[in-house]
Image (cartoon, rainbow, N blue to C red):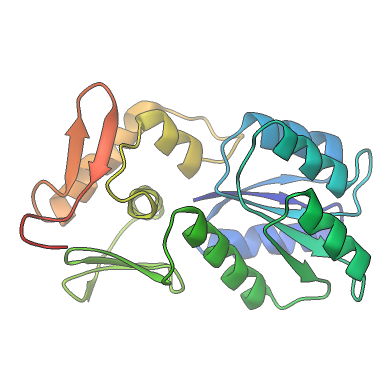
Length: 223
């Protein structure tokens, strides 16, 4: 899953990016509102962490511009402590949740997981597809109760498919959501990750929809 971190304080930005990477996310970063608006308007993100006090363009303006342009990715805003007016303004501008500084990184990650799950229509922290389960809290996939051994990219591909169960996901979608913005993207490598996952999953769980992409489905007789 791919995230955008918009924070102008270098130390906090680095801490957020590091925590997200450790949790299995891809994280792009921006330290000002102009760059943030451009990235959010031109790249595909599963969620955004947005500080409101930004140089060049404030976070509220950035968020309003995204929503006016039809960008619907979940946005978690970071506000100053006890700044209730910032929280209200952020929610009114289209934010999905807020967190006051200072905060515990574990809480931020939990809120982010919840936003991404809800965006995909999943209420539980665990997403199941037949014998396959994705634990979004632990960043772990299990098959028949046994933890799967996956590379970071295999996990990202599987997690994206799990969050979009039954939906057709194109190779372009996968490329956009498993790589950072500055990564040398190659859609052909997605086929390699899909092939590796198929060897680790029951037959036919990952369907190829000719000309369109891939779809994750439960094996026959399972739900």
